Length: 116
Image (cartoon, rainbow, N blue to C red; front, side, top):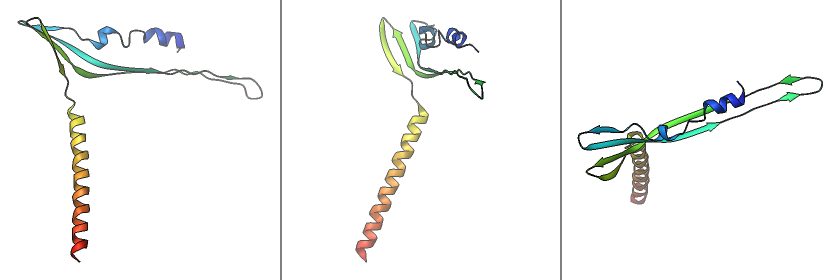
């Protein structure tokens, strides 16, 4: 694929319509979802003159989105409600538990060593 074609296809990758979702209205409450967008690209090239002529090419593009939260509009007031990442909370809890267990183990070893 030509690199310029790749750039044209990815032009609106992180546009406003990807960051802010369609507003949802129920009664007097409007909710606007918001996402974090990350994008990256690559390139390439090549050609070698000489005894072993060769060619090359390349390209690549990535786009990722994760929920960030929602804006809640009610009675003319806007409030931000962040999204809760349960996986991050669980991993954080596991790290704290491991550190706690290692600390308790160290204390018990010292206590046993001091009793001898």
